[in-house]
Image (cartoon, rainbow, N blue to C red; front, side, top):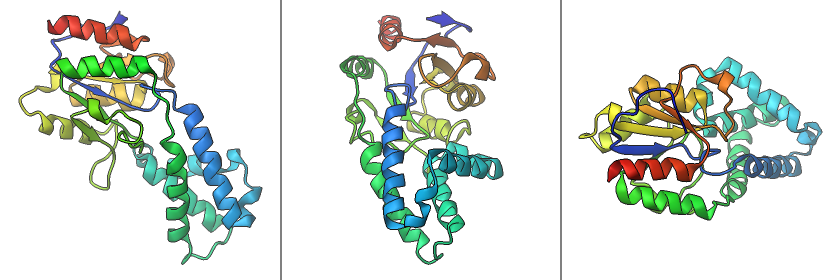
Length: 241
């Protein structure tokens, strides 16, 4: 582990999920391919679009509505709807088509393998600290087997914006009002969503360097950086004794 700031005594820990606790890239690749196949089957004219075309569509939407980047469910659904409009699908058909395609996507999206080491680390940590999940994604923690370790799970809704907005951090603090902001440690792989988001909320942060984020993407330095979850958990458990 590498420390960039002095770590204040930690009283609660929150975790990002995707690409922090498991490799989400192959999961999303399979889920997105399944959704594209589903859409092409039901709307054959869309079959000419490849992965790069749908990605370009999503990027255009993000440029127009940057806030969608904090809510992957809304982004994915709106991107799909815009793609169907591009191909001239009847507007009356689009809401039901988006809902059906997204439901198909979610069947694959929750097909996540969690390493036994992660289960063990979270189990030990949850015995010593309040542990909460803060994720911009839409994975079902019950379906992937992580629910027992979290006292609460926060994900974006119509009323709750995702990271780096402060909404979910504030919601977590309301869950445990006796714990001050600076006594929280948020763990995640995204320099923008996790590290900058925690910094804005007045939280400490632990940056997982084995995820999707790169050092050149950091806007602010984390409190610490780590690559091995077991090492981080062992450190936090030792500090609790």
